[in-house]
Image 1 (spheres, one colour):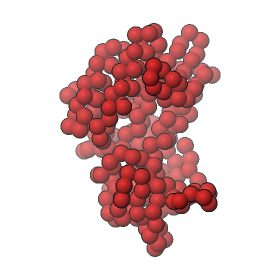
Image 2 (image 1 turned 90 degrees about the vertical axis):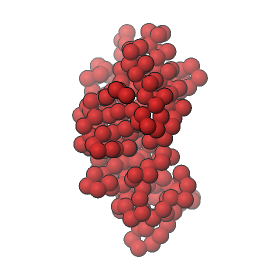
Image 3 (image 1 turned 180 degrees about the vertical axis):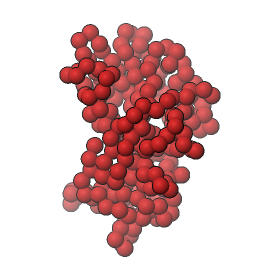
Length: 228
């Protein structure tokens, strides 16, 4: 996925989940943060960030914050990009045949799961989770408790019971991770739900990404460690 009009800036502080104060070309300004997660280990004062300039003159904020440098690693924090990246990647992946029909935001039960894929007799629901938390080379999810995430995992189990294929795909929005694991310290219930879902037949997959200031693409598979 490509971005247009990307500029570099310096993170100053985050007054709330939706906004950040940044410095761009010597000027301080507010920008929209495209991730409502905590990102506490990423959005530190002085961190180099990457912003996409909007062409909408009616917006209250001129920029969207989409990436941040963590040491020598670049992390994409745009929470809207994983779904689109997976939809694009699935068309050329080996998970489904070429020409499979892919729908976004398909209703299932009381929720909308991210993707629905149909190819011949195969019918599958796919839920996508973007991952931005890294600890010593291990990607972890979530970075904050997510009851919504637990609900989605349980609904994927319902899909399997009804005869659908079900996939939970973690998009690790950075490169170089040795594995993905549940964040047991932050939300053990989510980790237990993943273990239960795997036993029930939900396929749990993780993929790293190649990340640049103006681009993110899904790369190789990363091992998933559900031990707790």
